[in-house]
Image 1 (spheres, rainbow, N blue to C red):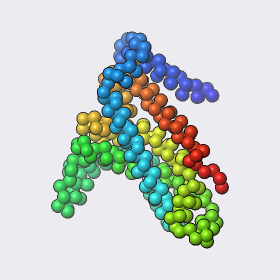
Image 2: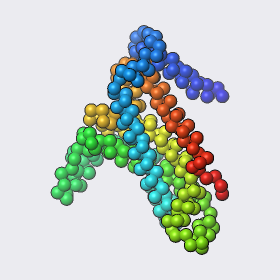
Image 3: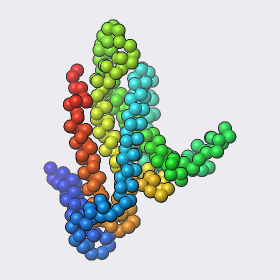
Image 4: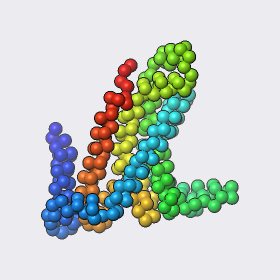
Length: 274
């Protein structure tokens, strides 16, 4: 309980108090009330841009991550003794430092990097993956899916292992084809694991920072700027800790609302029957 108060409650209260001040990194803070929140909602067009970028990233990343993780975990489940080996391979990027992964991807995606050099072998003039506003966000999403998909593969694989083979055999005897067994038996039985993965993946996607910071610095323009990166810049580059705290609370409220919406639909979407 003491640890919860020290490491959770006190920092939350402190950040809420700071958000009510014009609080420079060095200098005397001045109380401004709700001005930081008013400015964020009505006087800062960049906030709405980074919010849109973050929402786009969250939706794209979550959908791609879950679809690919479900497909790969289903495939690995059928590999028998080779399944654990490939699960470890997919999980390695999860435990590798994000900074190292991002730097490797930046080297790969530069104009003279591995990707464009490979395309050049086929006579294809590779694009500027990180400096083209139409491609930069896609590059961030691709790197993030590669980084994080292994976690969901492990969780969904555990869920698949918990499905009784007798259920699938009974469905097969009743005449259900492979796709019918997947959608009418496997998916309902896997829904608790899918729900957990969805909640955790969405929460993680809203906290994206390292990828845009190291790959694109939020550019070109504001095309890959996200809420957490914008928060960081306001706090430590623009010397506006109060406004950064207000942005942090806005992010907290958004994530809480989305998570609450998901849990409100839990009974309708998730099957806990054995």
